[in-house]
Image 1 (cartoon, rainbow, N blue to C red):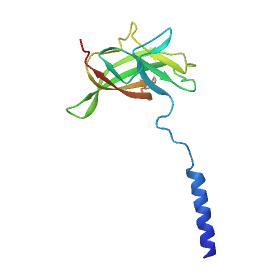
Image 2 (image 1 turned 90 degrees about the vertical axis):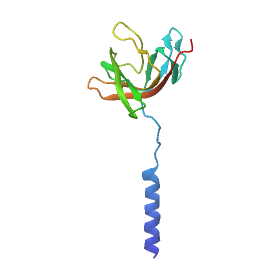
Image 3 (image 1 turned 30 degrees about the vertical axis):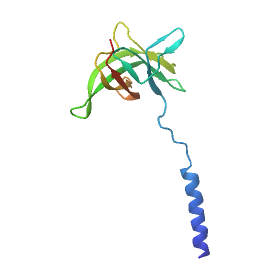
Image 4 (image 1 turned 120 degrees about the vertical axis):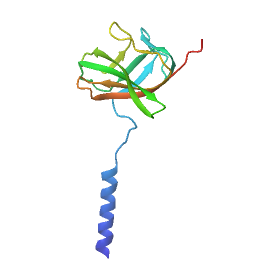
Length: 142
């Protein structure tokens, strides 16, 4: 019986150390959105915006190590309960970057024209997900 208690104590102690780890809700890198990025940094950070142009931000504690990337938008279809491809934009990065923004440029408009929920992805050159986030677009109150 004494061996059983000793064994049980050892297993309990081992389990405590084996399971002791920090769990994060989202690992690196992190994606978020703002109205624009300018001289004074991010302006209007949120996850809910009116229709129009937005800037996608990605921040990491280490270099992203990416050259060619894409921002892909998938829009939620309430009838099917699924996200459907909406549009995709290509960008080039400095691989040493750990803080980047993706905004309207000559090759992409980064415009959210229609209200709804969008799943936004930062994809590497093999279309693998690097970061993602969900954003809600509401109708502009004109």
